Image (cartoon, rainbow over all chains, first blue to last red; front, side):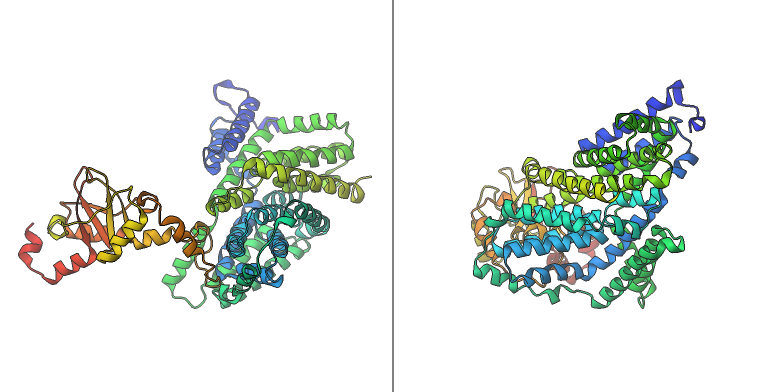
Length: 445
Length: 157
């Protein structure tokens, strides 16, 4: 890789330039003073302008499978959320338990976890948190325990599938792991982690949740059928979601990448949504949906991939991989454990997306030590479990956490950083301990 | 025709320290749609109208979230509860602090476009360069002016 390094400006050492850029971008992202997409694109631009890599190398480093999968799913979700079907499910689940506060907390957490497994976590909480606040307003109780449980549920649910959380999308794409493999390897452990987390939440908040009979009756007055705003569009959305998820499951057998399926699904749903409209209305609808795609996230990924490619080209990541292996004595079990725990703590404190972007080439570089890329699979599961579940460790651990905190603030019940961490960090450690036992029993010896 | 020829000049105003209760009383008794909020030098600080007051009664997670409409939710007494809470607040807490303001020498065309562009309420305040309130123009004033179409009045100014 070193031979591809070009003419670095002022004769500076490309390694130092690349590493400084990476660390600066990390630090400024953590300070949260600037938009992270702008920062990552600036970093990426400087990586090329300083001569660490060429534009051609930069473009080759952008993982278009991740970008395509994210964009495709964003379009599908932007259309489906307009139908009100997610609110329908949330209200139906709250009424199913007859308005009992603890029952509602569990049901809304289950709904959040299941949705998070198939939609991205931020979208899930954007859909569920406002309904939760309406319901807790009706119950006349504080929303904190409900929102707290939902944050944890969204990150646990997101761990279960390839499309549940951006780290999984990146890992799946880089390591060539299919949707089916994620489902078979990660989904079995998540219900258990969810269950243990819920039991802990019961001990923390369960006894304090009380609502009067009048308040429960008020919840039963919610009419979920009125939430369904566009039933024909809902049927089309459900059809496309079904096709896309089926497509993900069988994609590997047909040598198809998830991005192709997600983008095809997005295009199909855009077509179905606007079927029968006149041309002007169609254009208007397309533009509306395109505006809802989170371009900030997409461009953040693009910039980040370029920055990490730059650092990778200098050979620093390869060196870090060797250092890690020296520390673990080249022992596979110890390496898997280290990846799991370091990823968890790092993801609780910094954005897990840039962290995973850096860890992927680091783990790839361990292939020669452990006998080839195929032998690395348990390490990928360790990274996925650590990075996704680690997001529960603090309020800044995942984007979804911050979105929920924003809603809580607007509802007049702000979630404090330390208060959240006091409740959540221990639960995160428990979930990682469970994940470690699972990894040990299933893959390590 | 310019704004200062169409505007209403006899104005009832309110001050930021007055309570919401007092101002709502004036709005109701005089059947006004809006009251300008001004400081002691008559400089415009904001506007109070029924909608700006109502917008403070609906929880923010509804108006600023994915819940654009909530046809499935019962009333829950939220509005009444918040109404009781804000009635003793000062006007400055609930006022719309970004009302549509036009210059006294702006043309009727410009004033009408401003009303449409800002698209929130059917009025604009007229102010001088120091932001001192001179008058108010409602959309009905513009229509009234047009219905009395007199080419000399409309075009010579």
